[in-house]
Structures are given as C-alpha cells and as structure tokens.
Length: 387
Ligand code: COS
Image 1: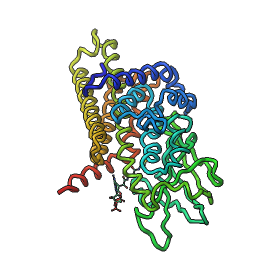
Image 2 (image 1 turned 90 degrees about the horizontal axis):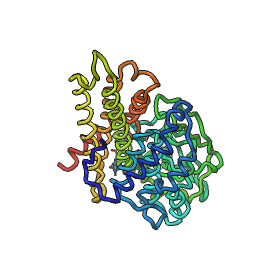
Image 3 (image 1 turned 60 degrees about the vertical axis):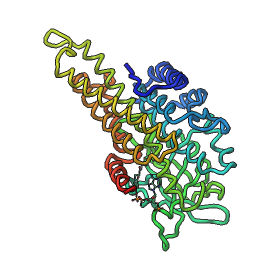
Image 4 (image 1 turned 30 degrees about the vertical axis):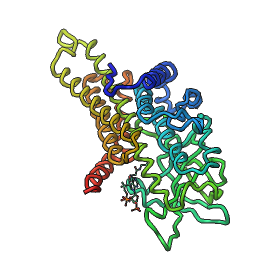
C-alpha cells in the first residue's frame, strides 16, 4: 500500500525508507510493552539523533540535516505508523523548540542549545499551557520578574510532552507587571534547562493514549533564569508560540495520518483473514465500503498535509493550512481507528490486537497543539483576514 500522492524526490524516498526501516527494526518490537508500562526509551532518542532525525529541518551550519518540511513529515509519518508516542517526541522536538531557536535565537543561544539539540544530544520540549490556560493560551499566569540581569520565574506549566526528559524547554511566561497587564503582548519566551535552581518536575499524567510519551507538569519556584535565556524580543513570546504552532500542527497532522494509515493496514489485513458466514469478511460490501471510505479519508488527509508542507517550503504563511491539515488529519485518525475497531469486532476492543492502541493514541490528536474547536476558529478567522 502506502500510496505516493505527492511525487517524492529520490532523496525524500530514501529518507522515508530509512525512517520505515528504523521504525520496524528499533521500535515495532517494543511498542506494545512501552505503551503498557508507560515507558519512554531514552536509547531511541540517541538512535534517532545518530540518524540526524532530531535536526531534520535545521541547516547543516547548525549541525542539522537541512531538509525541507515535506521530507520531515514523510519520515514522521513512517515513525507514527509504528509508534505514535515516539512520533510526538520527534514532532515536538523538530517543530517547536529547535525551530524557535533557529528563528529567534541569538548566535550564542544557537551555539549552546540548538547545535546539541540538532545532533540529538539534547531533547527539546515546549511549555505553553498551564492548568488554567489551555485553549485560552494568552491567559497564562507564570510570572517572570527582573532581578538584576536575571529573571525569577514562578508558575506551573502543564501538558508538557517529553517533559521528564526535556533538556531544553522553551517556556512562555508573563513579563508584564500585574498592575500593567498587556495580554498576549505581555508574554515572553525563555530557554529553560532542568539544572536551574527552582525547577522541578510535577505530576506525571496517567493518560489514555500516547502512554510511552511522558506528559508532565513543570514547576518553577523562584526559579532563577539568567538574562541571556530570554528568546528574541521581550513581549513577543506569544507570537513566537503561535507561529511555531502553525508548524507544530503539521507535525501532529503527520502523526495523525500515520495512526490512520496503520489502522487502515491492520483492518485490510484482518478483513482478508477473518471468516464469517463461510467467507472472508472483506467479501461483504459492509466491510468493503468501510475500507474504501477509510482509504479515501487517509489519502485526503495526506494530500492536504503534503500540500500544506510544500506551501510552507515555498515560504508562504501557513496559519490556515496548518490548522486545516491538523483538523482534517486528527479527525481522520479518530474516525479511521473507530472504523478499524468496528471491523475487528470484539477483537478490536482488546489489547491483543494493535487497533485498540491506535484508537487510544488517536484521541489526543483532536486535543493537543490546539483542539479541533480552536483549529476551526483559526481557519474561520483566516477566511476573513484578507477580505
Ligand atoms: N501567527 C502569527 N501571529 C499570531 C498568530 C499566528 N498563527 N496567531 C495569533 N497571532 C498574533 C495576533 O496577530 C496578535 O498579535 P497583535 O498583538 O500584534 O495583534 C496576537 O498574536 C494575539 O492573537 P489573538 O488576539 O488572536 O489571541 P487570542 O487570545 O484570541 O488567541 C488562539 C488565539 C485561540 C488562536 C490561540 O490562543 C490558540 O491557538 N490557542 C490554542 C493554544 C494551543 O494550541 N495550545 C496547545 C499548546 S501545545 S499542548
């Protein structure tokens, strides 16, 4: 299967193959156990780093592979087909912290943080949400106050993917004062490392899906952050987060397409082998129609994703495409995995077969990096932005 909707270059096909072979050899044998045990395997980070997969879109000058967005997303889909937890780690690292450092970091910050991130020696994370600030991200309350050359940060960040393992965390905090609130313009971005005094890891979430990806709260208690850890301009942190999420949402869309593709493949194989009423169930139109609709939706989501990636690589603004691709792909993942379970029947509802995990993993794609409702708001707003 694995239909090629976009003509990939030879180099893109080669990297896709490397990702596929890596996923099958190094991840597939362990995915079920990692999910069961909520285990994050650090060796995978080192191995992906050795392949250059943690600096895919970082220029060679900063120790990355210097690849385009489409190549990155094609590789990410291959990883997600096998393990969506590993895929989210890759997506966050490649789309958010590394891109933020590349775009807005000083040369000194790039030297110190971006290069080891791109080499895969350090893992990146992104901390925007808080317990009381999810969809309304601009209402975040973590406060940064100047103290000489340093900043003192207090607050709690929530839902941080790879949070227990993040070596470099790009975190948003308020730098306006409580008696002069500036809304989204009162937020700045800081480069946080776990060695800072006052940094601690809080509650680890016990999740429905993506169980091999550690999601945690981070606590900043009078955390002293050196002044040279401010990213870019003070007050631009929310804009940086939004612009980065435009790209991050393409990564989540690729993860979603991978989950849906995996569910489709399992359903196709199962329908050929499962017999009822004396013949394989693939011979019943009820099943054929489901498989056909699943295939159409996966292909459509992938086409939109690839189109969005090439728009980004042409340098176009992709706020709307990012949200369209993420919304379409995540709802596809949820719908396709639901249909796959239906085709498996009772066997789909138990952990013996992989579609149960795919269904659980799919759900969060409709929630994180902006819920489906937020994506619809962004898409609708963009419809009016040029009129
Ligand atoms: N690119 C560039 N700038 C953007 C932008 C984008 N995609 N989205 C917003 N901005 C800018 C706006 O132009 C505005 O700038 P000015 O101050 O110059 O006017 C500023 O950011 C504030 O934007 P806005 O007024 O639209 O902010 P809202 O509070 O209305 O929030 C939504 C907008 C809802 C879209 C935003 O809060 C959001 O995406 N929420 C979901 C957050 C999310 O995805 N969280 C998941 C984190 S990872 S688990």
